[in-house]
Image 1 (tube, rainbow, N blue to C red):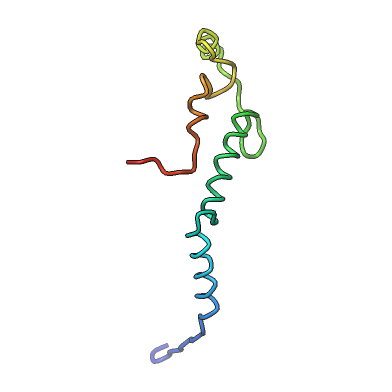
Image 2 (spheres, rainbow, N blue to C red):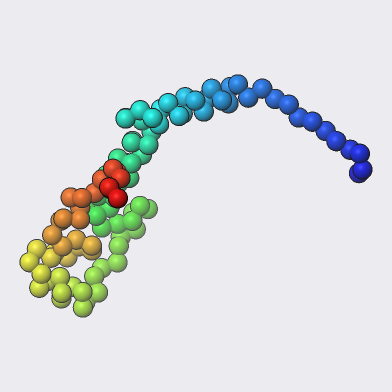
Length: 98
């Protein structure tokens, strides 16, 4: 189709205003990103407590060999990825310094 052309124009003022509101919300200390980050931390900590994935599927148990190692560790316990609790105490939605 040689010579065929078309042009589309629209007023994006409403879209830009909405994006400005989203940007302002994210910039606030209690904004959307902070809330999402806190939810990520709390839901992850909860999964450690219940030993299940985000969909509620229980985590596989410890292998017999690893269970023996954990039994020998002071405070090792039976839970996956948990020995002394230090890892769980470091959970945060704040960026780590580089």
